[in-house]
Every structure is written in structure tokens, then in C-alpha cells.
Image 1: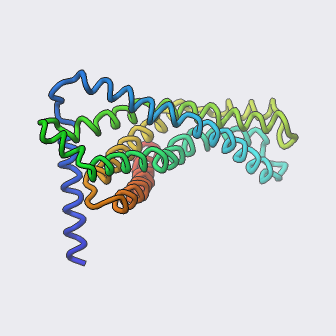
Image 2: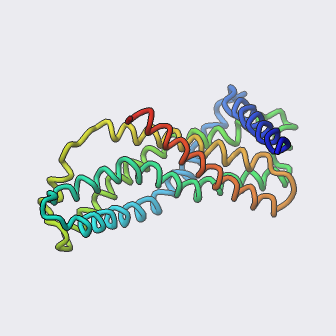
Length: 251
């Protein structure tokens, strides 16, 4: 047990040391620009499809489930739109979306860096005097922080649209009533709160996943294990900070 405790302390210490290397001032800024563009395409643009599809169906399911369970005639039907809107903004388009991205983007980061480590590409960069952690990880971090909020806003809009489609094509709730519910008690701070969470979660995904891949030791089996750890640890920290941020920002 004591050994595990010291191992945890070692991992946290190495992680923060790794972050220090990542955010240190680049030797030359120009090579980083091209890397950032590549990461924006890989992390951001390639994730749009899955986020839009999942958000559309999630908004539809939330609306259906809310409408089916609101059978009490005393409860206003406008609460269906209200509940669907706040469910998408407060939780799905931030927390659930980032859990999905932890599986897609995080595992890719870990496996990419892990492969570079075991094939000695990272060692070659170090020999050439390049800050390998900064050169390889900082663009991933910047791309995540820049594009995740965009994906979150798109998820909100598409999810609410999915709920509207349910109202339009089914008889579970009238379209005008659903639309009126979307406008009820809207607090713009909810969007700010959601975007703050996305920025924190994006940092967690990029840094934790990159850390797991950067320090891989062994062969292809260890790369696979690092990829799995990246998803698991990122998901745990996302859920943990979800509670902390909600308490800080909404309580």
C-alpha cells in the first residue's frame, strides 16, 4: 500500500514536470504553427461528424423520454422543451461530449506518442536539441482548447434541433409548446458554465493522454495499455472535475 502511494506521488510529480516542459517557451515558433494546423484538423475537424450524430440523437431521445414521463396533466408541457434544452447545455454538450472525445481523441494521442516513443522518434528529437514534449504536445493542447468549445456549441445547437425534430414529426409534444419551453427561464450563464467545463476537460484529455503516451516503455502491447489508461484516467478526472466545477460555478 505504501509502495502504491509513492507510485502515485511519483506519477503526479512526473506529470507536473511534463506539463512544465510542454508549456515552456518554444525555441522557434514557426514549426509549431504547422503542427497546430495539423492538430486542429486531426482533433477538431475529424471529430465534428461523430459529435453531430450523437448530439442529434441524444437531443431526440431526451425529448422523447421527458415527454413520455410527463403524464401528469398538472405539469406544464412546456417543461419538455425546457428540460431538453438545459440537459443538452448543462451536461451532455460538455461532460458527455468530452467523455466521447476522451475515447476518440485521447486514445489517438496516447497511441501516437507511444508509437513515437518505442520507435525512438522522440529520442531523436531530444538528440537534435528539440523540446520534444513542447513540440509534440503543445499543439495538441492548443488545438483541444481552441476547438472543443466550438464542438460544444455545435452539440448544443444540434441536440436542441434533434428535440425539435421529435416535436415536429411525432405527437409527443406540440411544436409551439416545445419552442415556448426552449425560451423559458433561459440563463445565458449556463452556456458560459458549459464552456468553462469544456476548456478544463479539453486540457485534461490532451495533457493526461499525451502524458500516458509520452512515457511508454516497452513495445506495442504497452502502447495499447497506455491508450486504455489514457481513456480511463481522462474519464475519471473529467467526472471528478465536473462535480468540483458544478459546485464552484452553480452552487
